[in-house]
Image (cartoon, rainbow, N blue to C red):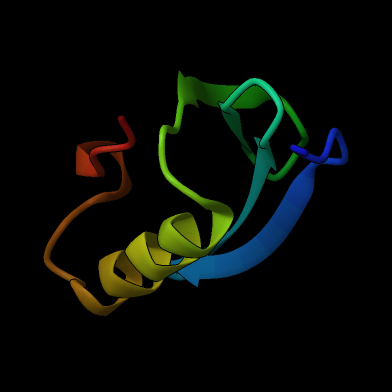
Length: 72
């Protein structure tokens, strides 16, 4: 059974706090800016844990700007 509750995490990438919300029931991934306006919405076809691992890896790659992150 897939949960319908969204999973949310906040991390810091390029010195900017970033909140990521993943809806596991439909695979929607939303990334808002600091004001709450959605700046990216896509589908994530892996697990929440895989997404967190990707974000951790991305935050360690300081030479890549945020908009180059592959999310689907």
